[in-house]
Length: 243
Image 1 (cartoon, rainbow, N blue to C red):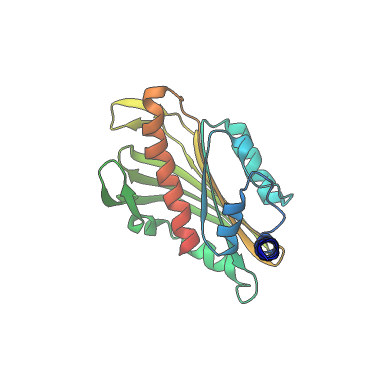
Image 2 (tube, rainbow, N blue to C red; image 1 turned 90 degrees about the vertical axis):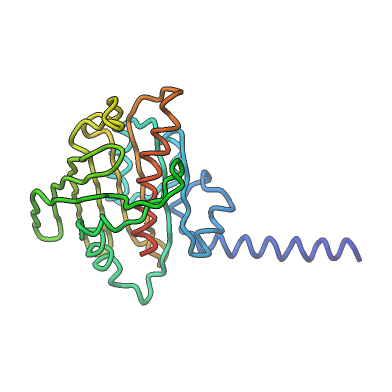
């Protein structure tokens, strides 16, 4: 009797896992854990802190995804984070247009809530945004903006997007030297990137964000950089994924 019960629960568990995995597209490798796959199958956002870009979980051959991976690889970041979420394709056929409209409303970035772990308080992720120039050619766009974010001051930012019928690509890059509370240099020009790619896989929209920073991995700076930069990048991606 006991053996039969064990067999029953083992079979149920195996069926549940198989069902959950079936809901997760095959564009992810074995670096994505079973619990993370279950979170995705439940519609939750998965956020992964990584110590190397080689531990990214995506393996898609989608051209926009490959472009994103090459950007991160060439950056050689010391700090990396993945943000992943899935949406059903059916009844969300216009998802790319909706997402593009929201994330390209650059001035709305000021209203993104950010929780500071150090201060234990909520702030606006950006305290101000000023558009310097904006250009759109077909489904591609280029925006230059000055975006103020404490404790780094004004970040001169280049934002580029590309969109096709079934793919959306977004990349944000700092253009100036960033200083921590104006005390010391922490990130050089074009060394901090946020990339978002949305593509269709197995009748689902895959929302994939990756934040990366090439900054010195010094023991007394690592926690500060990881907390200050990476938490902000993760907040940004997760905000638009949920919105």
